Length: 72
Image 1 (cartoon, rainbow, N blue to C red):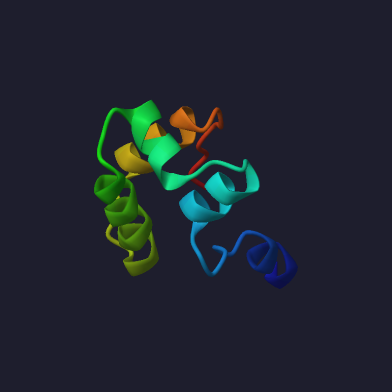
Image 2: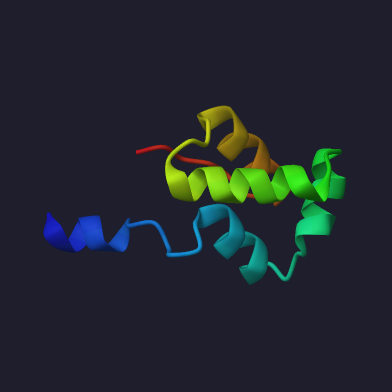
């Protein structure tokens, strides 16, 4: 079980920022897709790291990046 936990651990930058960067997408581009400000994307990325992000936000961020959000 420990190996599985390590594989599923959150990247140090968080899932939103890591996925966005891996896709070659800027925060401004993600913001445009979400029809929100760049500051809102930044807030969500920081909220994820502090444990304050909502599942709804994670879902919408994932969808805007063409991903599927799975909460396990």
